[in-house]
Amino acid sequence: MKHRLADWDRHIATAAEALASGRIAILTDGQRHTLTLFGQAILEWAYPAGLTTASEPRSVVDRLILDSLLGYPLLANRESVTDIGTGPGIPGIPLAIAMPDACFTLVDSRRKAVSFLHYVIPPLGLGNVSCLRARVGHDPIPQSEAVVSRCAGNPQTIAGICLTAVRPGGIVVLWVKSDLSAASLGTDCLGAVSEVRTFDISAMGHTRRLLMLRR
Image (cartoon, rainbow, N blue to C red):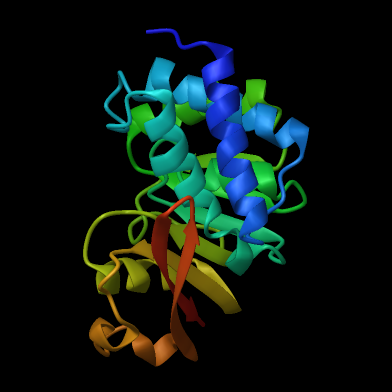
């Protein structure tokens, strides 16, 4: 189903204003337009392919785009970022749009996810983004300064996997449930970690807890 461009513009503008007022991120008009194009592609391609359950503009903007950009303050100074289990490019593509000077590698093991990324990246003009079909833990993943993941699952398991793809001194940022604490991680992966913290970042009444681990 096609949605009017004005609907997208309104939702993106509202999210951008909330990010700015919360001192989370400042988006240019060009970045807002690119986010609109990405949102349209999500509904036209990724939703029918089963890569997301977000089914209309507001849910795409609130649940995917805005939620992704809440991680911007932790990543703003990083020159290379890897998104593991990216699916339809979440959180990697919204972050790459907001961070044009950083190089992003989007990793997923599913053919349909990588096919969507190959479809959407060129028309968005994202020269700072590449994608890789790989299964972390089985296939080699180039190391970067930061690794992000919004995957569902055991945070300790995901953290341990992500730490293998981050350079010494780099960080892993996980989008986690609101009740998760750093103390609940256990000790299996913490031997390689020098710092563990949680951050609650809010915009438009939506709060996301982010778990940050520094290698």
